[in-house]
Amino acid sequence: MSTTRTKAEFSLKNFRSRVASEGLATPNRFEIELQVPPAIASVFGRTELEIVTMFCESASLPPQIVGVRPQRLYGPTIYKPFGVEYGGEGIPLSFYVDRKMNVKAFFDSWISKIVDPYQYFVYYRRQYAVTMRIYQLDNQNNVTYGVEMDDVFPRSVTLMDLNSSTQNQVHRLNVNFTYRKWKPLHNLTSRVPYPALFDEREDPRVVRNTPTPQGSFNSTAYGEDTGGVPTQTINELFSPF
Image 1 (cartoon, one colour):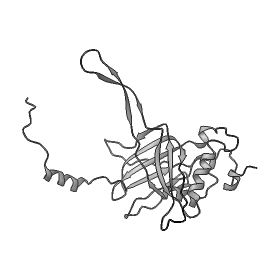
Image 2 (cartoon, one colour):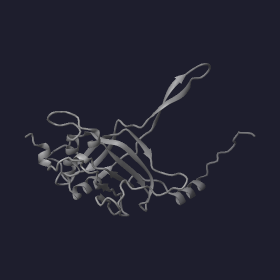
Image 3 (cartoon, one colour):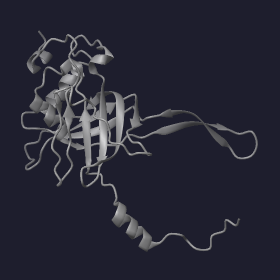
Image 4 (cartoon, one colour):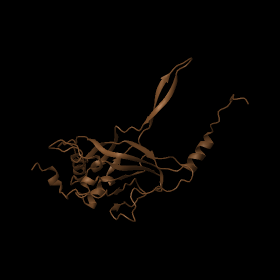
């Protein structure tokens, strides 16, 4: 069978028809589910935890990279795969900051339970590493794609500029999260609905926001039990005595 093509198969009419029927994914339609680490789950109330994910301004779907090694026996070089990386060194998320600075305090508290700010020892991973999901939505707020990241924790929190000459601007907090790996949350055969991060019927602490058709929306879910971690206030977390 001949493989020679004399005319392009692309058709502007077919392209327009497909876009009109299928639509195109837009980056402003997304949702995140963030599991609160057990070490600080008792510190923040329901309202503060809703604010953290509701105020997520931007996120990213993580990359996936196949590692290859060159091999040349004869002729052109062949690249053979030997492993896969998931971009776990960092994924950025940006958050609006509320007037009471609860979003900033949330991440300050989280980092203080990764490395102790006074004695500098590292806590157990189960106390600070969590699961996070990021979903792509369509215009009807249906989930069309999602990823789940394991062993997530904030690696860095960027500075927040204070400037008396700025007006009509709001604070944004950029947080870089590290994780071990991620997996896609989709079934190409049946396209079954995605399972919830927590079973809402069994865990009354789950919080989900009602979607609005105008823009993106986010949701949050409370984390696991503190596992014996005593209840602390935000001031107690940062008190040197």
